[in-house]
Amino acid sequence: MHDIRSIRQNPDAFDAAMARRGLGPQSPAILALDEERRSCISAAEAALADRNAASKLVGKAKASGDEAEFERLRALVAEKKAEIARLEEDAKAKDAALRDMLMGLPNALHADVPDGADEADNVEIHTWGAPRNFSFEPKEHYEIGGVTTGMDFETAAKLSGARFVLLTGGVARIHRALAQFMLDTHIDINGLTEVNAPVLVLEEMMYGTGQLPKFGEDSYQTREGWWLIPTSEVTLTNTVNEMIVDEATLPRRMTAHSLCFRSEAGSAGRDTAGMLRQHQFEKVEMVTIAHPDHSMAEHDRMTKCAEGILEKLNLPYRTVVLCSGDMGFGMLKTHDLEVWLPGQNTYREVSSCSVAGDFQARRMNARFRPEGGGKPEFVHTLNGSGLAVGRCLIAVLENGQEEDGSVTLPDVLHPYLGGKTKLSAEGILV
Image (cartoon, rainbow, N blue to C red; front, side):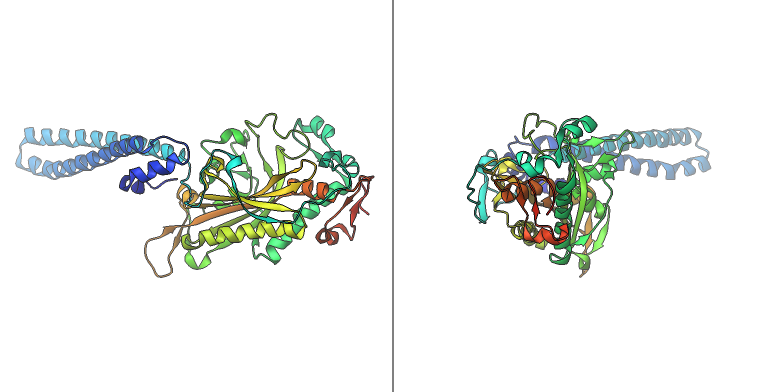
């Protein structure tokens, strides 16, 4: 959420920031509503002063026996009391309307974010590994012989409908091994703290990280009012909701493996084959609560943590900076990691690492207390996939596939698979 004081001080800069997001001038409507709200507050304060002054004179009029003045003053006190209540209610309503207006606007973009219309204008900043030269035509993950027996879309559709998958046998174990490997790497090597968090959250938590109010259709809500998390960014980031933490506790670097749920609203017809885009999937998430002075360095660190997972798995990838037209609603700057999928002959996103600045912190009222004293300040928040487990499974299967339908598995997964090194053409770990 944006700082109304900053908008008052420099409305032109704010409108320029929103223009990079493809929006027209926003400050006129915001400042007009803000002025109405402040006018109500000022009028209520003036009415309160009048009421207090009249209240002091009521007793004197009574004591002097001036009944007419006493009644006039008593009526004035009652009138001012009603006026104050009305003005305070108006101010409260306008404050809520202003908050809703600010809540609906996207984050400003970092100066380093390139301008562009869509993903075609993203800028590649790093590549690692070379795509394998196959002596045969590589298949997509769901077409590989050894995978077909362990990746069942028909039964999943019977159970839950479209965009679900039932993983069994060796494929299910590889999927589980990937998540365990990612967690262990982030905990033991990258120094993140593991968190096991709920996947059901209260509505205000979704507001805190920016999924609401604009993107409710992208997520699922239960009859009881809880929301199913689209990513554990929601739970991990909101651990500091309405808190003032000590500066010495920053940065707080966390990781969690969780189920994630997305309705994929507006994506009908996109990536419907296989398990690339599912309503239910798993991710190992990274979240950092950082000091404002260090958040950009933390963003680079988080990106390297995600890149390291792909490198250990020996999966070719590239890192891109998202352009203005491809940026997420609440983010200041984003790096996407795109892994090579030979079955599609292209790179596909497997992680987004983003810094939000104080945008989420203002929504959550999450602050830190400076060590040297002074007024509490808003923290900065970051989040990133470390990685999307299902998409990483796709990459492992496609890059390791052999002509006979078997799959050679990355060395780092062998300890998690009881020493097994391959998925056979029959779908058995050997």
